[in-house]
Length: 205
Image 1 (cartoon, rainbow, N blue to C red):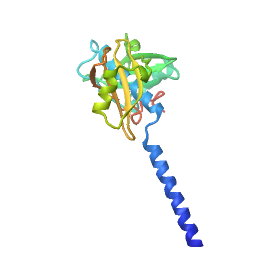
Image 2: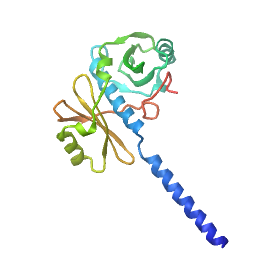
Image 3: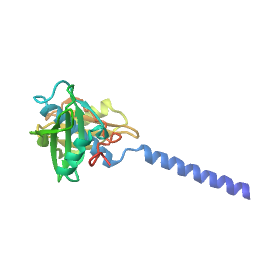
């Protein structure tokens, strides 16, 4: 009797562990939304910082930002979430934040001193939700043909009309960019922000 009870307990524990692992491996809906938003912020940074930056932007984690940058954001944008952070070849910092439902781009010099607000960043980083059921057939066909096993989780358009589509399987998230006609453009970068999730207040805590 004791042996049977022990085997039963072991079986129940095994099922519990499998369920937990499956739950942990599946990307959350919040994460899907975050991935799409951060990808849009990255694209916005690329398109709005060209006149101000030197060379290619290299994404960095929000925890790598200088204390001066963190202090400036905390003092002037209370409650802000860092959606994107990067450096150029001169060491300048470009930071995209989201606060009070508004996207704002900030430029800092290599020492972490504030330089200016990046114009037009907010409009380009903002996404308008698109219902998955209304996506163009070319978009859904592309996902089916090229990402077997993936499901479309989130979609939205930016100010330029580009369509950002977040897809995921059990372990991986991908953000695809299509033009306004539904033609594939590229796989979007998801910058490493606080473990890849893109969230942060001040230093990302």
